[in-house]
Length: 217
Image 1 (tube, rainbow, N blue to C red):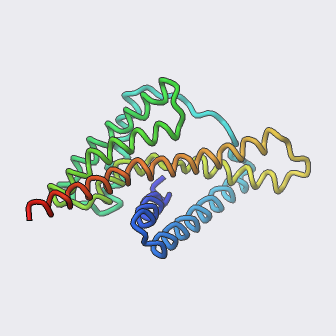
Image 2: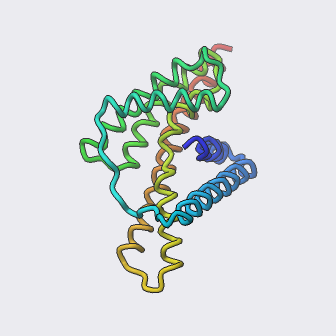
């Protein structure tokens, strides 16, 4: 999970939102190459053992307390991976655990994976954007660390596995084709939902802050 280039995807989307097109394209393209390398290595390793990654398999339900604890551990892991000073861990860990709890609740009441990711990331953006401004902390570091474990790597890997099975299977089944497309579309919608959820509050709060500063001056 650590290898999935979630920060590059989110940073690229943030670049697009402020019209840094060249930088955004470069980051998203780099993230795509990393995902391709991970998928290739994973599928090759499984193939050597005669195992295939199942496509379209439903996830296993976990209790809320376990999901929240796992989220906190994941945020700490990403904070270490990003070389974030330990004094900054408190906000992303607390908000990340809250975000995962909201995502779990959204899924429990019948919301989709993209809806759950959007709700969680929106709360993170609304909470951490003003915190980053007031405490002079990098928003990309504390915000992305809180949500990057929600990146849909498993759906991307399942889609890659489905494409490989489609390429090697002379008799393509509609079930396999449908499951492959579903996994790919789910991954794309989750990524877009996360981007909107975490970026829009940052842009709105920055504009409000700039307007307030100009009025004071």
